[in-house]
Image (cartoon, rainbow, N blue to C red; front, side):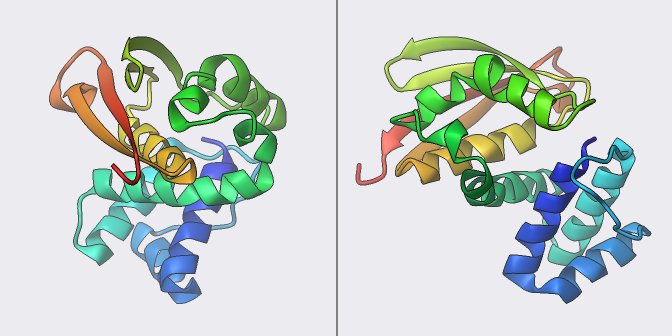
Length: 182
């Protein structure tokens, strides 16, 4: 796992709960926390951090992953506006993950292995994403989609009709986007 994910988690936790909270998360995970954005770290480190945060907050690990990802979008918009500005809404943005965003991620962070998505656009505002990754971090993807919707002034309803964490062969995220005012 690339360090950028760890850095985003640290920034979200520190911004919401203070730097002492991040230190407490690291202590609970038994980690030192010296992550650089270009470094590669074991997936187990991220899961230890997520588990520690979940225990400290009294919530599930999936909720932590979703929250960190959603909170990361404003940070990513600030750092990489060129990923976001060409799009009029979250659906248009999401549909560029494989062709525009993830190839750039691979350039910026050599050795990264972002997920691959298959898309089934069912209606003007509905897409089902097939999440393909050995990591089974579909909650992270869900949070990024929710954060993108917020960025574009929308709401999104996300359902997981299938999930590897429940024993299914693949993870599916059915995303229905709405105007925030609706």
